[in-house]
Image (cartoon, rainbow, N blue to C red; front, side, top):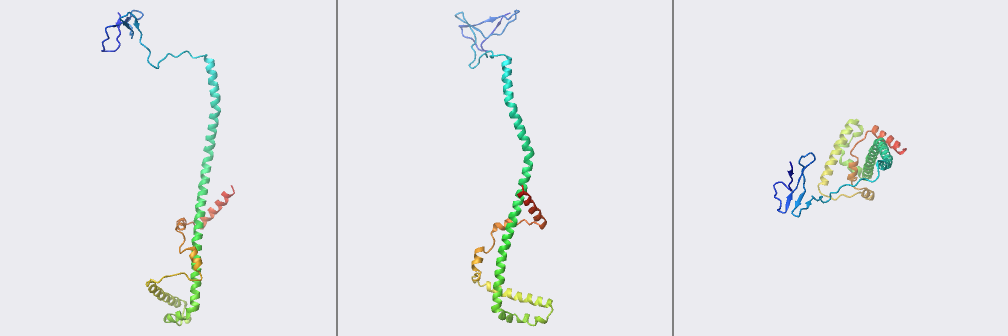
Length: 236
């Protein structure tokens, strides 16, 4: 039995188009998209845009195999080199990273030590200046100062060292009290003329950044380890 094919389900065909019936081999109905026009010609369905039937590939399997061999030969050495580079990096990168960590740790230690030396040198300049100026003051006014503190200092040469120490502590307390009262007046304070240029050049306090760099404290044993590590890195 023949089967009628339609252009689209549920859509009526125009009057000048008739459906065409086909019989498949063996008498079975076959599905078809052909349509017969009123002129008597059979209209075949057109190929969709962009669709085409591929032409047979030129050459046989041997030609294709030759191209395959050429491409494989071009790829295989590059693949081997890439794997070799990856293996080299996997072996070398951990060692390099450890070396970089050692260098960074040594540099941090060097910066810490340099900052500490700078801070101590700054303090030493101020400390020496204060001691020298106090010595000059005592040379010029020591007699008057001792006479002022005579109730505490008189007769100390015959006293034990412990009593002498207590007398000096009480005298220092009086001096501190007198200095505190003088500071409360708001008098302007300037460097001594002898050391004014040096003290002005170094600044009143060390740079704040040096305090940050010197925050971490290293024991003598740690410093010795870093010094040896620095020597080893310099020899590489």
